[in-house]
Length: 620
Ligand SMILES: Cc1cc2nc3c(=O)[nH]c(=O)nc-3n(C[C@H](O)[C@H](O)[C@H](O)COP(=O)(O)OP(=O)(O)OC[C@H]3O[C@@H](n4cnc5c(N)ncnc54)[C@H](O)[C@@H]3O)c2cc1C
Ligand SMILES: [Zn+2]
Image (cartoon, rainbow, N blue to C red; front, side, top):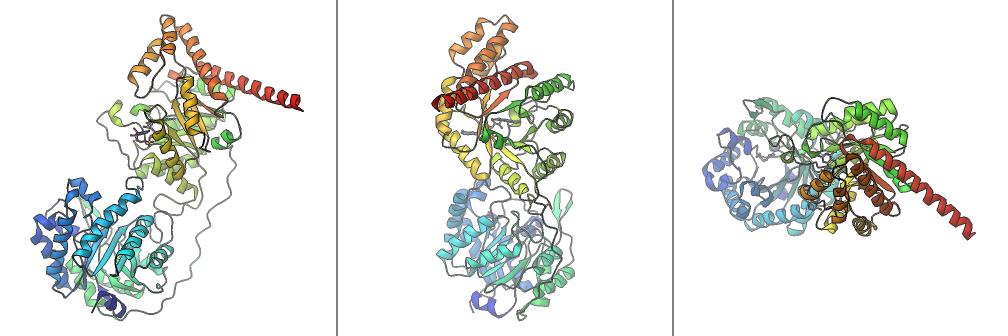
């Protein structure tokens, strides 16, 4: 009997974890490579599951795609590894159990690291190996990213008529990480033609049963469940899953009662767990009806926006907007910082922006300083957020904190790597890149956490992204802007530019982009400062004319400053008609310079407006 028919007829038992068992044997290598180098051990795991009563066993190919194998330098061995895996599973199955080719999800919470094109290429290669070796079905498991699973199911349906088993994984019971309810996700997968839809990994039986209680019986497809043995414990540096197979047996009955017709185990489960569930539900006739309990609906997500100042992207859409970077000090003396913030507020800037340990060197927390200037001077601060120093937990917690503090303007950057800063040996976390961070901040704006949990309220972040025009290939930098818009960026803030021609070039290269760009201007403070930027900061080139102008006053700090301001003013003159947003960067807390430039921009803007009005009157 084919797997298709068996699935229609009776409850089937899947196998349990492969990785957990191999790990428990003390083998801590690439599990998929073991199909070649430790084939006996892999064969024994399969045999143990067949012996325990598994009707369906999976090949040891969870990560046998070139993307994951590349981590071990094994990307060229996709074919050998998959072929060996299938042969081993078939040898153990002896035509008594069905052998399904397992394909694991690649993307975790980071979409950016594995673009869909890569997912497709990698999956096709693995699928062709499986079809060539004639498996009984394809099993997709541990897909946290729904988009990725839908993509591979669609490809599989085009390439084969074999049964497709497609399982999502959840961080939170009942919802996927993008907030899609489980029921809706399974319906989407079923619509694409998956024969079995279900859930595996991450959750233990308790939460998996809870999640399935909300899921009606699929219209055509069969429901499956492969829970982990329990929640993991961390002992002596290893993850262990302390459970009693008897508990798993009771849970299997409840999964069956929820309509699951293919029941196995994921991480932490062993042949003992599989034997326990085989004893209780193997071969049972599938249930044919199910009642979904009527539950009190969770509180609706708050939609009314709290009173807030206009967002910076709104201001820059409407007209002139000035924001000024004033970085938190590197030392604990804060007087100058606060004087600067107050002076900038009095000068009328729309926001003070605070870098997040730029150049990977510690400063006083920008959130602390932003909160204080927000409270003290009613400044609308813009907080830079770098992915370098915080993992996913830290980033979400930080953003929820900013929301609670009433700070709604953020700049999402990947961040300068630690290698260039005060602590070259420190870890650069980079759980996310700027693209994914932008995406997840926008998810918070929908009231959904990074892991898909409803937050009960929507944040209202306006998300800026970084634009670095100081690169050899400006078009590539513009390409990154377009991609950041796709991920949800509302507007851009640029690195400082240092020539009028460059301002024009940037304008020409970006004029098709509707999102506002705040163009960066940082006044030079001295000839040494100019030489440093020109010679040592990657990407920044100052014209010889500018360097000569600064050099003329190299022995006179006051005149150097004046010349720096004069140069910045000419850059501003060049920028004013091309960009609404101007981003001034305060060098070394010398806020007098950025206050003067703010006044200058305001005067020039007023003059331009008056000229427009009088031109208008003249025309009339
Ligand atoms: C306005 C502004 C504020 C900033 N504030 C901070 C801050 O507070 N803290 C901090 O640590 N850093 C800050 N940075 C620095 C920033 O992190 C780096 O300049 C970064 O390389 C570009 O921005 P991103 O982090 O969004 O990088 P992304 O665009 O996400 O790029 C990430 C990686 O790609 C590389 N890359 C970027 N552009 C290109 C390109 N055109 N071609 C090829 N490779 C490219 C980068 O080198 C980087 O390794 C800021 C930059 C700007 C423009
Ligand atoms: Zn698992």
